Length: 173
Image 1 (cartoon, helix red, strand yellow):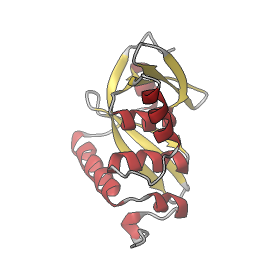
Image 2: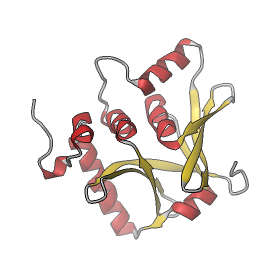
Image 3: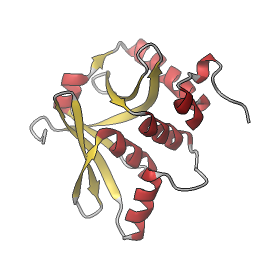
């Protein structure tokens, strides 16, 4: 399970939509190596991650909120999430619960849950080395600021329409 290379804590930079490819990625930054790890995700998971980062509380619990509430009601928590492997282009992850139990997870779901618990996201150093994209420090800082700006203006509706809020796609209420 990626144990050999150890785990490094990564920052969830945010989600980004590539309109040309109609693909959505969540970006994880390993600040020590200045590598960005892009993980291809679906629109529902992108919306869940962006909503959690923006502090949006839905009127009714969404799937990841429900999982958090169920775990808390059962007396458990999520201590950390670990992105453990990259096999045939698919990222594998695990939720590490309060008593150390491990639950297999898709990486996108694990990230969405981690944001709801406020717990660390760790990534196998081997995965970072294999999937990470090197960015220069000045470029990384610019990209991080750009993604944070994107998160400040994104709404769940943007993922449903596929529009980028930076391009006037945000609907006003």
